[in-house]
Image (cartoon, rainbow, N blue to C red; front, side):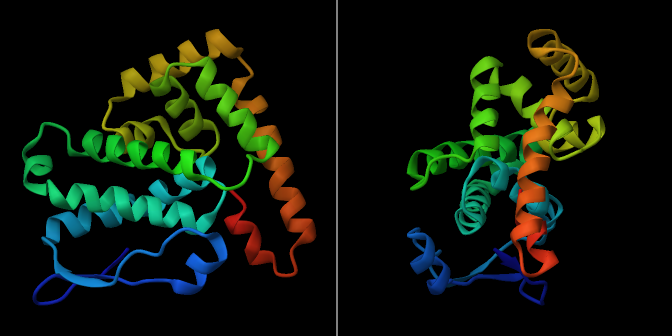
Length: 201
């Protein structure tokens, strides 16, 4: 989703037919809509981290991008309600998670070994604890950043990390990172251009 500031605060969603043909997932429809500037700013602050998280959970970058755009589109429909809620960030995170759950069921390829491990983490831990561990250890966010992204607070994030470590071991962070780092190194070694490694995870 591309956001553009202008007199009418317009935003445009552009179709990507080539990517849709390559991945098998439909491209987002092209349309022009007027969006509130506070919604645009809210999404711009979260889009990159949402996309990084979606890339961890979904096998295809194009699918991840479409999933994030769909989640933000869900927010746009109920934006007045979101804005008046006690915690808009929590509603946004739940919207993203719902879309990712749908996306995982639609994936056309099996998970890579690193993502298979990620699936085990989500089966072994309550979902909120798994989210915190993934954001903290794999996206390398600070506890404050994790709390802001999920619409939580630092104390709850710290509790979730301790609970996850008690369940899966104090070295949980190292054991989570290892397969993803190996996967990234493999991508770098096979890539013709170094910048491709930025999309590995």
